[in-house]
Each structure stands twice: as C-alpha cells, then as structure tokens.
Image (cartoon, rainbow, N blue to C red):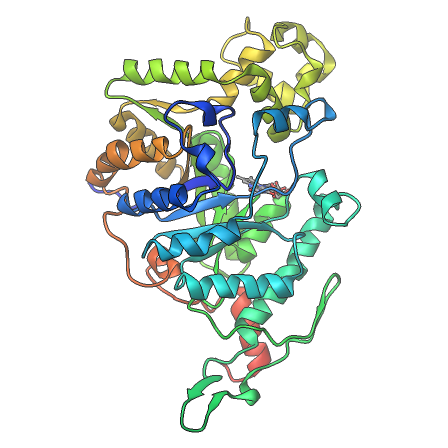
Length: 458
Ligand SMILES: Cc1cc2nc3c(=O)[nH]c(=O)nc-3n(C[C@H](O)[C@H](O)[C@H](O)COP(=O)(O)O)c2cc1C
C-alpha cells in the first residue's frame, strides 16, 4: 500500500562545513566553493530536480567555544565558521529555480522585528511565496555578546522575547495592509489607499513598534513558519506558532512522544493537530550493498578528527569534552559522579559497548547514520513516518555529494513507496506543503490580529 508523502528538506549552512567536521577536504566535496553563486545554484537545481521541498539553511551568530572554553578548534577546523548571511543568498537561488522552497533560520535576538518583517516580506515577494522562517531563540552565549545584549538572555526570557517579537511581525504581516489596500491605478495615479493601511501601535514588554509595515502584502503574507526547539517552553511555542517543528530526536522511538506532545500543544492553542508538521534529521550513507555502504561509512568516520568531533559534540551536548583524554576508557568516567549524571551519563548509558574510549564514544555518537542500501534507508524513513514524523532534514556528509546520492539513489525507492513527491504542487510553499493557502489558516493566532485591527470579521 502506498504511503502518504513526507517532506524532504536539504539541510545546509552558508559555510564550508555543517555537521560533519573536516569533510570540506574530502576529494569530491565542493564545500570550499561556498562563496560562489555557481556552487549554490548547482545545489539548488539538483534539489529541485530531485523534488526536495526546501533548501533549509541553519545559521549561527558566533563561533563555537564550548570545547576548552575556546573557539580555537572550531576556527581551525572550519566548524560552521566562517559563516555568511543566508538571507543574501536566497534571492539568487530563487531566481535559478521555480518550485524549491527556502528556509531561513533567524534568531529573534538578531535584529528588530520591524526590519526583519520587511526582510521576510521582500524575500516572499522575490521568491513568489517560497520562503519560510525558521524561528530560533538560539543557544550561543557569543551570539548574545555580539548582539549588544551583554550575553545570552536566559532561556525563559528568550522565549518571552520570541512571544513579543512574533506579535510584532504578525501584526505587520497580517494586520497592517488590508487585502484591497493596493490600487496601482494608472488612471487616478493612486498607488494605495491610505484608509486601508494601518499602524500597528504595538506596545509590548520588549518592543514598541508603530508601523505601518513597509511592504505591501506578499504572496503568503506571513512566511511559512518553521521552528527549531524541543524544550517544554519550545513545544508550547510551537503549538501556538509553528507550521513545522524541527526536532533533534535520535531515533523514531524517542521522537514519538515529542510528536504527540506538540500535536497536543497545537490543539490546546485552538489549531488542528496536523497543522504542525514534525521534522526530524536524517544522516545516511548509501551503497549498492550494505557492505559497500559500511566501508564508505568507516572511511568517512576515519577522515574526521576525534578532536573536531569532541568539539562539535561539546556544543550540541552542552558538555566540555576537553576535560577527558580521548583515549580514556569510558568505564573510568562512568565511575565518577559526573559520568552518571546529565548528558554525559545519558551518552555513556547509550554506549554500544562498555570497553570503548571517550573518543570512540563521541565518534560513534557523532556518526549515527543510516548506513545501507537505498531500500534499507527507505525502511528507516518509514519507521520515522510510523512514529508520527512528517518530514526529514537530510544532513550532508559532503555537499553536494550526499544530495546527489539521495536524489539519484534513495529518492526513486521513496517514490516507488509513495513517500516522496515526484512533482511539485501548485502555488506558494504553504500550498505545496498543506495543499491549501496561500495564507495561514484562520485559527492561527497571527490571523487573529487581522480581525482585531480591521474589525470586519475578515
Ligand atoms: C533541531 C534543532 C535545530 C536548531 N537549529 C538552530 C540553528 O540553526 N541556529 C540556532 O541559533 N539555534 C538552533 N537551535 C537551537 C535553538 O535555538 C535553541 O535550542 C533554543 O534554546 C530553543 O530551543 P529549545 O526550546 O530546545 O530550548 C536548534 C535547535 C534544535 C532542537
């Protein structure tokens, strides 16, 4: 029986290196060309040929510095640093494609909501409705320092800001310009109707914004709303805001309760439970036989340095692994109090064997990928779907090599099982994903601001 189709995003970053450290040096990688349009246009056209839903740009605003309390290793290995602004790249890629969507990650501390709303409306116009905003509150202390905030605000405070920030941008996108405000009448030479363009007069705990919005309504008005974050506060935020939530579960079994929780949060916010799509991450290595894939996986894992892996996992697990000698057996560490607590304790508990070293454990954890034939990878993708996940962010080992492998080898099997689209739907990104739009559904809180501002029941 054919399955419902899933969403597939190509996960990338405007830098030479995303999650697999050091792979920019792999012979066939083109990641060192990240400053050139030619490389990115080739990536975008490849993804469109393979009917990916979007090219999903992660973004960070500071070098990683958890490991040894220093950025040295991250800088030396090119770990998401240097990094350019993806918002500047997307228009060129949209011009070179016709259906591929683009997800722009921007954290809510990065710029005032007023200029951000203009940026996104501009992108929505220029992409003809193919832009999404990945809402993050970020986790990097350096980002807070660089943004003039004297450090990263506390988690709760960041989400409180996100509430206020989204109120402002929703009002600008949804409530400032009425649907028939734009006239463009060549005879009367009247561009728009002042009576139908409203200030928003927002006064909030963090932002006071008068308006009106600088841009006329764009194809989706509010861009497609993605979010990344899985804390309880993050899940509640997703229930009220996200049309897609990117989660970091390691396997389908651990994703299932998160999925259920987020759908419940959506219902509590008066939305339909399936109006939040759940996105997980997929790393893979494919071969024509399982043995071939395993050999390649080993080769790739050996190519990466243990140190760079430790540094990366220090950031994402929030634990400084520089305290340990990579050749120290984990059984030694498991005996210490910290080896039984927190993230380190969890990692040790997950360990595939008890006789491995810290370096090997982190290497194993950092290289959790589906390794096998296209059919085996498709089986694993089915398991994600069975856990309630709606889509996957496909992570690269090398770019564009991983995406070429996916398009040419994995996608045909997915299509034969109904799991991946073989043509794009009509219209904006929202219509392509949900089959309806182009605007947010009326029950989304952003649309409520229209009714409040216009008072006409629209
Ligand atoms: C799957 C996933 C992807 C994320 N991607 C980014 C990113 O690209 N840039 C960023 O600054 N933060 C990113 N974050 C981190 C969130 O901004 C951070 O965790 C924040 O605290 C909100 O998430 P939380 O609700 O899990 O705490 C990501 C988080 C998750 C779970």
